[in-house]
Length: 352
Image (cartoon, rainbow, N blue to C red; front, side):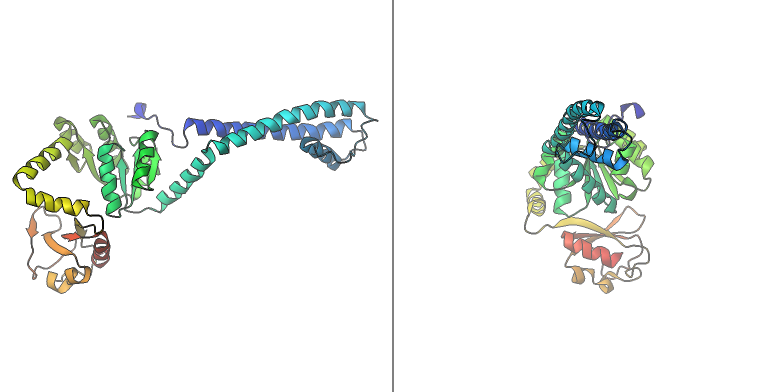
């Protein structure tokens, strides 16, 4: 797995080259400054102080032309040194200015500042989601995360794909290979709630799953599986669920045929822009005030406006659809609602 990790964590190569140019130009400038101070000190005669040497160096480099403190007529060698030094200074300054100008004009400074801002935003994230990939499937995922007001980070090695995501709105992203441990750590995988492996190949999604599971054993991982034969391998690698786009597409087509009204109802929920409603879930947390109360006593629907449709007991797999009002809640129970993102946030506070 190590052999295929080829990403660059920081900036693209062009930015690194420009930063190197600036570093080199500043180093040369400091060297020229030191040479000037030493030259005027040595060639200016025994009466030339260090301050005089610095002064002569500065006015020569800046080409300001204030009065000389070294008697050039009495020290011909100093005059020759000054001529050569001026020529060298002009070249050094021209190189430094061109490097800095290129760095700013090419937008690289803006990219670096924007990247540092993103790194700070990622450092503040907690229980967020990481989307690995930026293809058409990933774009649908991102749209849903935006609509439901979830915090997430997008990771993709192709800068052009990431740039296209700008049409979906401002979002936190990282340009890099999601199979690289350092990139996932940069995305805050230790603090993440879940990861979606949505790369264009099963191999890529398998590598991402392996890396993610090793970095965060508690992470929920959902992977895209193109080949049905790869699903078991991804589960063994650590994926909690593997989704086949072709299978989902087939199910959607047959649902459109045999249950069109239900499909239309779900479509309206997904496509409504003014009021976003989704099937969502809330878990009764440890020490929650809901534990031990009945559904009627909790008054969750009255307090939130959400519609409770199912209950799954903690650790179980069976769902109790339309649970009775007398059903008692316990820690780790999962409640399934039809709710808006704002309703879900309110429910999470109550159940936490």
